[in-house]
Image 1 (cartoon, one colour):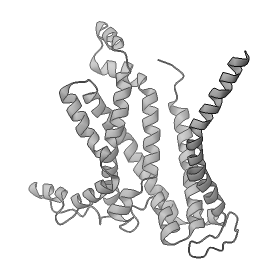
Image 2 (tube, rainbow, N blue to C red):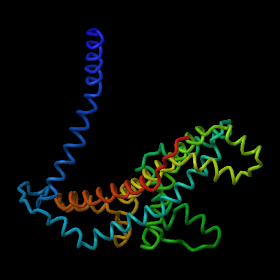
Image 3 (cartoon, rainbow, N blue to C red):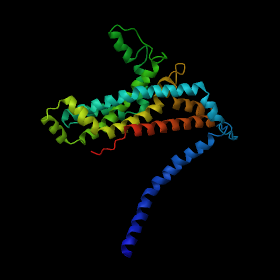
Image 4 (cartoon, rainbow, N blue to C red):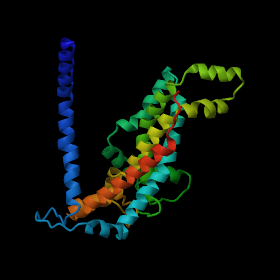
Amino acid sequence: MRLSANFSQKEERAAFLFILPAVACLALFTFYPMINAFIISFKDYSLINPDSAFIGLTNYKNLLSDPKFTNSLLHSFHLAIVIIPVQTIAALMLALLVYKSSVVANLFRTAYFMPVVISLGVASTLFKLIYNQDYGLLNSLLHVFGVPPISFLSDSNLALYGIMLLGIWKSAGFFMVIFVAGLNGIPNDLYEAAEVDGATKTQKFFSITLPLLRRTLTFVIIITTMDALKLFVPVALVTGGGPADSTTTSVFYIYKMAFQQMEMGYGSAAAFILFVIVMCISIVQLRLLKSDVEY
């Protein structure tokens, strides 16, 4: 018994030593900056002037009455409302096309996944060229059909949809792979039994595939929601928040306040408001999409 207890203690110490580097990195580069930023959000803190005064909830009160911050949240919600269903459906359709292993399916799977590998900065620069009104590829294609040039990046009604298209193109391949993993986990016996009962492809999809993909679908929707609400790089590189702040998302607004206008306390408060919003949305999604049935 004593040898068994000593061996168990040695295993625990070894396990602790293995996880110690990860815990240290999380504490140093994640938890400490978060706690420090939370403290700063209650101060009149500027990167220019290191002296800061404690002002309590003033930053939060000012943000809630700031129309620019409110509009940035609305733009982020607009992005999420469009991207979540479109990207999820597109990723699932792609997965249904390529999840069965074959030479052709593997080739298309690789092609659909290529945008995920490309750097987001490179993809943003590429789409900025594609959207260009004078020599962009998109306007060149429209010109073939006799459509006059469209100013995708300087039209406040279209610019946000250009950002959406870039986000969907960039991320759909990643979620396709997630769906492929979920589809491959569904036993073929269920489909064979459904065929014996005379079920059509549509019936098999809604009665077998979708219910068994519920956990995968929950993961995809939650991650897509978080990605859409914190979209930043395409906005910064393609539109710069314009025209007329029509593409200024909440994260880009936080960046402008904290690092361009040097109001770090104000920006930190905005970041924590966004954090609470995203956390609440994720909790609601988990409650609505959870399944008590194990397959």
